[in-house]
Image 1 (cartoon, rainbow, N blue to C red):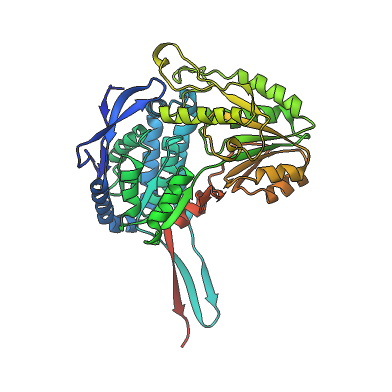
Image 2 (image 1 turned 90 degrees about the horizontal axis):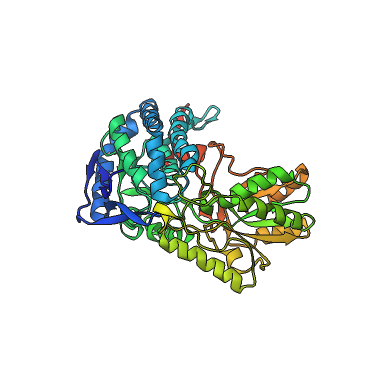
Length: 485
């Protein structure tokens, strides 16, 4: 990839520089080197994008689901055709292993477009007959211009998770990827042009959240906001949009419990728990960062878990054999390390890791952290209550099902949870009582895109996925037709 590549905004079907002429350095976190520059967009760029979307909306919203589906499938096919190029760009931007980009991130982006291309063809609404009086039927019509703001941890994966249903529903979109990982969104702009997407239907504005992102949220022409990111940012979005009564879908942080009962399938649980703890350097909102273990098997689990985690290879993300790459940035690196220090100060015992990893060669200045396992901490301490979002997990023993649930539900978050048991009645009982929007029983990250996705408490508002997403990007209109008299 060329050095110092200049990324541009995608507005009204064209690649355009920011109105201010200012650009932001984009670093590869694995090398700490600047390799591209992205627009430092502001409210003027967002306004241009919104006006372009508003202009495109009448024809796009009325062109028909079939035409929209064909275009979404065309985009999916072009991404798939260029999968290796997209995977490399994702890894260079985020520091994640190339193998993960290749088998998870980019294929899922393809699936997002294909799923909603199919879904919109089958999207239906209700009718209600008042016998002898009237027929009521419901229209689901696109809300208008939608704002989609996505995070850096799964860049194209989550960017398309929002864009695809919005476009399928007939909305036009003004989208902002994270300023830390802009490259695949920039590449998507070119794909959309090649696919023949009409001008203004999708607009991608790059830049900082407090400038470009805030301008999207505050613009009166944007009728709905779909956001994935930190809880603090989600609160600011809710405040910024409250006076305009915009539709909101906020998927935010998590402090996910992984509850392991003594009767689990131990080997299957162990393999999956290593993945659910350290995949993408722990930078997935669904990772299990608090591992709650039945005291009957606590020592056995601890020994086996540490042994398996030791085998994870940390290194250059372009190395096909690497399991764990770099974290996203210098600031995030220091945040993670500060949580590890806090855990030590609270009396935690480091069973594995806890330090920076120095990589030789091109990654000598990258931000690498050892997979870290900590025990001996109170469930109410800082690291067990706040989202670290890194390769750090804590082990907490429990004596009973009730105690496990009390610990699991003790945080302000409620995104996801995992339950490991062979007792189906226990699994159903615990799943009902646990306060999370997603519960995996004897598995992790198994995703049926038809199911609702989102969290409880401070982990979010609303749901994404399946019909939930298509309902979010549409408004329900009841039509009552009188039959007699």
